[in-house]
Length: 146
Image (cartoon, rainbow, N blue to C red; front, side):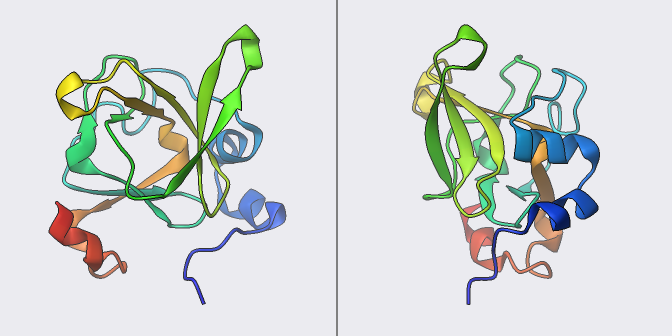
């Protein structure tokens, strides 16, 4: 059995803050520059707040100046992409593969030396696990990647 699974809307409503629920389940966006991980650069792993599924490594995070945490790439196949034409824009939405949580969007204006992509994520969709706690929380397989 996979240790990461999609929870019911009822479970998520009870477990998440209102902001995290609105972002992950209703495709909302948190305010720029006023979020937990925008200026946060500790060593560790970022996981889907709804499932615990590993999403991003701290060494792939960079200061983009956009107001939200930005990463150059996700971990393996941890995300899926959907066309997003909301708000009269053409964007690529990024969702977690197991939880189907809205995470943010990906743009092609990231650092060229890191592949040129900018995964612009909502802090409210993420949970950070510090490197020192990764083993105890079951993420020891990812420690060698940091």
